[in-house]
Image 1 (tube, one colour):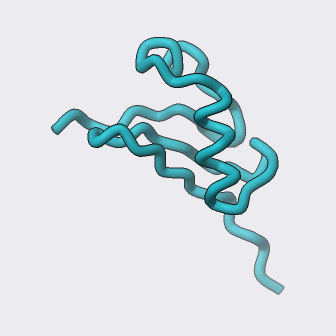
Image 2: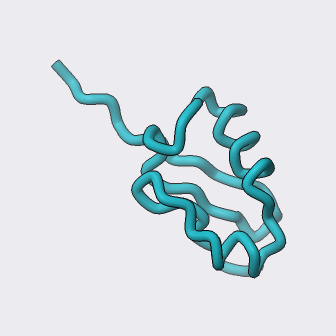
Length: 64
């Protein structure tokens, strides 16, 4: 199974990785929205998994 590919790092889309893996920005945004995230600024990282799914890791909310 292939290694995960980073698609977003610290809220910034890595466009070359999207193009290389034939992922559209719309597909990425849909994966974010499915996990309750509205903006790229809320995303610490996102990965294209070996099975074709997209995993989104949110930025942890500050604890009080």
